[in-house]
Image (cartoon, rainbow, N blue to C red; front, top):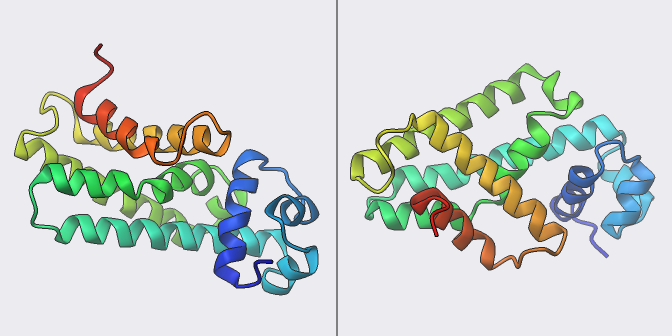
Length: 179
């Protein structure tokens, strides 16, 4: 049974993503942990959601820091970013729309900063010629996050394999939906 706070968060995030109204009991049950374990680490639902947001924002920041520091060709940078897409899916899915998070100005500010950094990575992709230059970089960043969210949800629901998701995201982002 998972008892480490980070493991508890990792197992609770998909539950809340699928059912935003889930109670602490439901979250614990579906995450495969006891309610006592959940409330020992996160005494209230609000604290749980805030901890989830912090983890997601930290994970996005870590992935972006690697992409920003990577001097490799943009194809490799984008492939690495897409391979670690899950935090961006969670960012869109939970942080932007969860009321317990949106009431925290610091979380909202961090989420906006993450998005602006993602825009810069997309601009770098445009400047390298990998990504289309006729689209706003903000559109490309939003598309990446939307594709990440869709791939994550389809993976959670069993409609897509976890190893397939990055390839699909990369294919659509770089090549579009052409046949």
